[in-house]
Amino acid sequence: MRTGMNQPSHEPSVILFDGECTLCDGWVSFLLRHDTRGRFRFAPRQSDAARRLLTPFGVEPDKLGSIALIADTTLYTRSDAILHILARLGLPWRVLSGLSAIPRPIRDRAYALLARNRYRLAGRRDQCRTAGPEDGDRFLR
Image (tube, rainbow, N blue to C red; front, side, top):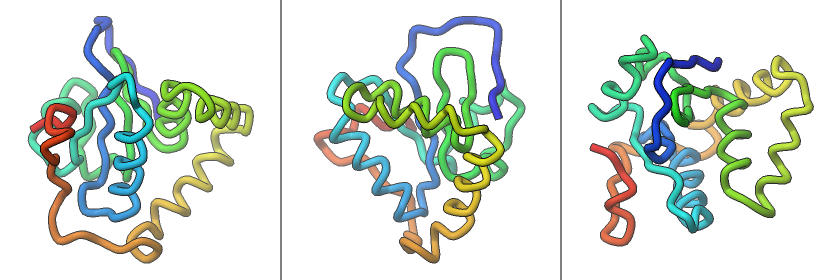
């Protein structure tokens, strides 16, 4: 799903993630390591920040799935979110955004399969990830 708004923004892109998912937590750790330009901010979808950010899009955080990206005035979900994140990371990760050549229904089916089984595959946390001292400014509250 891609949902746009009218006004452009110069804010960093925000990645909304399932804060209880160990697999999603690993993805956030990966992004923190590889986003050397600090292009992304993060918010667990269970947070007040996620609710505030999603209000203009008319989307409830619980209906979001495991990963979403808000970039400028657009909400990207499912495989579109992952591919747009990879494209913004730079090389070598940008090359993987070429997977967008695969039709979205096929990509989204693969994404849904992984998302549906994420707790079984990687486990579930009792509480959302909190920012450490080195990356506290990257997490929204």
